[in-house]
Length: 168
Ligand SMILES: [Zn+2]
Image (cartoon, rainbow, N blue to C red; front, top):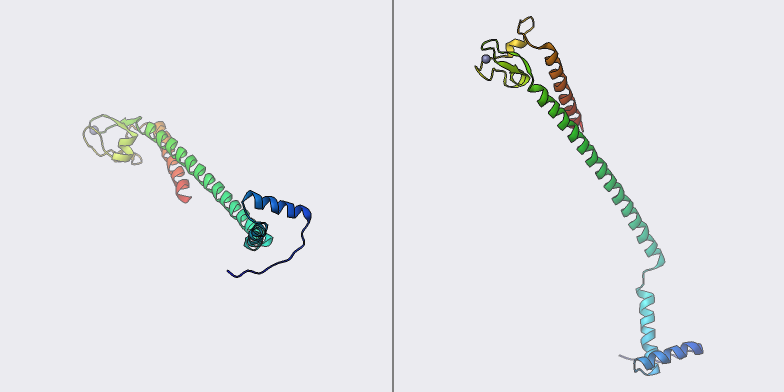
């Protein structure tokens, strides 16, 4: 490494500080000055400019705002899905309860027919007689009309909730 000489006048306090620095590291005064100058030049040139730092801070702030927004949207979406799920579960429970209620008797064997037998399986659980004919208009089926209406109401609620869930 070739070396050159710099003559520079410095304040007495600075010279004192450099001498202290040299003594602390067993350096000559010239060695300490040289080392501190190298470090000073590196610090000035290596440090990012204020403009670069400000731009980076702005970018990070924008990223943070975006992340917060995405998190809020995700939370909202999840709460909404949970609510839908609860509604659906409640409607399904209501339907199940209503579907187990007796609505009439099997025209063939007089076994009690539930809403489930009538609307889902379509047959008598005992004699397998098709019970959907009980729904034919004008049929003297002995169906409990009130129970049937309540059951259809439960089906309506269930279908409604399902339609809302699907449209999301
Ligand atoms: Zn039957």
